Image 1 (tube, rainbow, N blue to C red):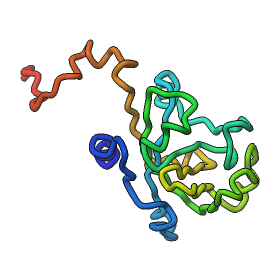
Image 2: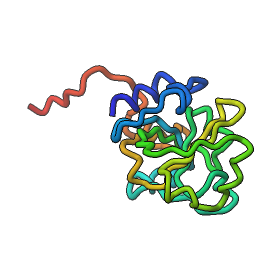
Image 3: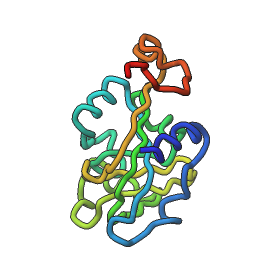
Image 4: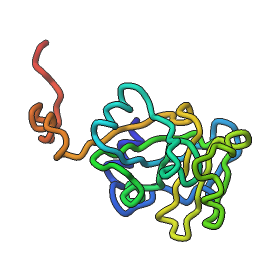
Length: 173
């Protein structure tokens, strides 16, 4: 997905790839999409690549309820992630969104009460850079791309992928 690649290449640090969700939301079915960022460790990222995202249900890590958590930017994942070394950029179908303000954020901790009426819970932090959202279903994650930091991925150098090239010809024809 070239859009996700573009975001990861050109907007890796210190940039919100889009406005806050509630400033751009769309109500048309299938058009309510948003970009989310997730950070984890490389082995978990590989598991996600081979299977799928897992729904968080641990009380301590579910501030706005059960689900798969995303931030608005790569930078936004830094203080929230429990594990580090791999980034995921994803296109999300937001569906019906529950807006949570700071005084409401712990009302849903460790619960899935909002699942009956909403697809996504979006926490509007007092510092916009720290907004996060949680989707109730893996099926809402439409496309995603994973980047593993260089120090965790020895295959990059082994296969010469750390060198830029402008021709993919292999001269076999």
